[in-house]
Length: 394
Image 1: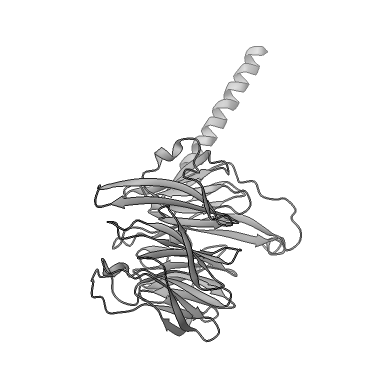
Image 2: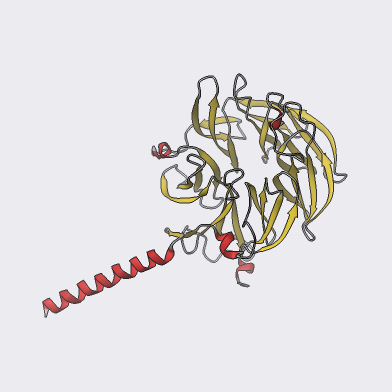
């Protein structure tokens, strides 16, 4: 009897192994992780994070921008879901995904060199519309309108570049551009705060003649009311809850270093700077998470930093939020975000910009939980939130 029982256990074991192998073979482009912990039975109307989208930029000219999705409830990470959800769309997403945001029930993917914004259903990633804007860069939303920065002109490095950029105002109901506001050269990220739009003018195509201002646009009249001088080659900006606007400067890659600045929104005057290089950042509460890959043409090398700035105290808390030493696995950090509920930290690795990248998940204490292969140059995140009322309609 014992031998028969042992044989049954062996048989069951073999069946389980075979089933797991079959599931692995069928999964193909999906990876399974332990699902994220999300609040159970939240109050009516309270948001619950269902997962997040990750937009992979793809190399310029390669037409390889793709969209991935990580489902918190199932723990499944799925690659290239846009192609699966939209099999009839020619050329799929297009050339260089530059920003990704959710507004209402729609997911907006800014595809820079394809001169368009793909509008998708936030639950299914099915394309429902398109906004055509030349050399579009970043997108924000306010009261039924999308605001998009545009370089306006062609992709061209030229110190004498003549085409200034603009911010497009888009009706999110019709996907039509209803107005444009001229700003500086090669405007990058924008922020909306206190009835104004703030735009980081980079002048990135005009090296070494970079721009050094933040444009201020009045939301009601949609006109530029002034510019604030900050530093050369501006890129990212974000308003905190203390009345400050945080702005990153790339520097000029030679004698002028990359730095983090803040502007007092009450006075529209620069407030100061923190001596840390910034390639990308994410603001979560009073913690501004940043990384930098600071390249120098003088030393011909990179110096990588993973920092946290306390925006209330205006002080650098740490230069390495990855505490377990696994940051050494990351070759070229590129995308960065923080889960607003779990406080997990997500960092992407662009590797060599040609091969598929990697997404790393760290807990709030900076210890690696898992990593997974992504598309080429993983960069931009959008958390999919649902209220408990919306969930009942699924």
